[in-house]
Length: 79
Image 1 (tube, rainbow, N blue to C red):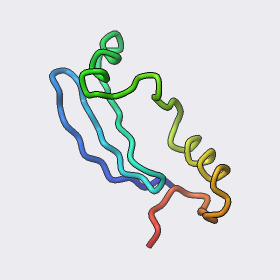
Image 2: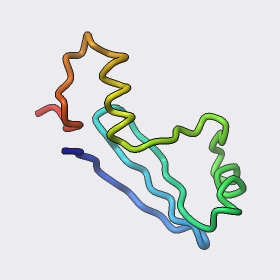
Image 3: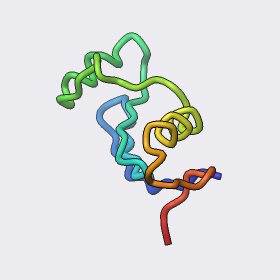
């Protein structure tokens, strides 16, 4: 199970989504593939720092990096 809260904006032909997750905030830019890097730069995002992968894989990696947090298997917000 994955929990996230989303905010979405349209920037021309691009969708810009801010996902608030239990491991932090992520920005997703969706649109024509050949123009994604340009759109990311216009938003001030560092393309070289972009993470690739699903939230499941990112959560598994985050849990491994932070065993001291005793995080649940599912990516859910603490109650």
